[in-house]
Image (cartoon, rainbow, N blue to C red; front, side):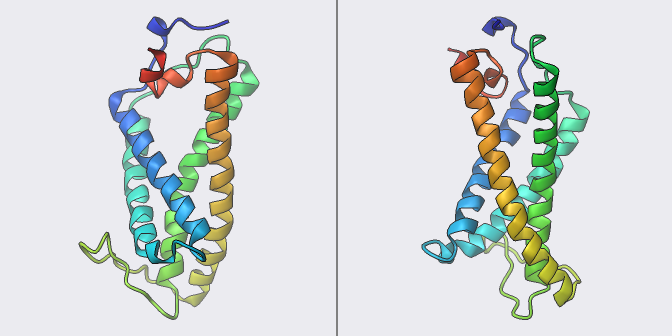
Length: 180
């Protein structure tokens, strides 16, 4: 059973902007984080600046999301799928906060502090933490990065499942151009 595209409830333009902007930054940061030892070591200042940007945008996105209800899933969506979608979305929100914070802890608690700037435009203050918190941040950041990668792959896979297999209009809620 498929929902007609004219009746699909969509996210607002603001919600879509937050989603796609943060998605691009998260995917870029995952690539930089995973490849930093090989080809992208030069991009680490960009990785840090993007992480802080994701943190700020996620705080704004959460404020927006709490004030603006998400459009409902189609009525035919099974309960297990609704639960999985909600759990995944909130886990992604949590990670979009936890990853930048653990990265910030890591650089703040490092014995060899490197410059922490927002794209070279201004300095970002270090958190007042010691080496233990920096070590915790480092270990947590690495583990959470892998969890984020898994959830991003799951999220993209679910979106493609709706588009290509179920052929419903769930993806059009966040990408209305696909309904044309």
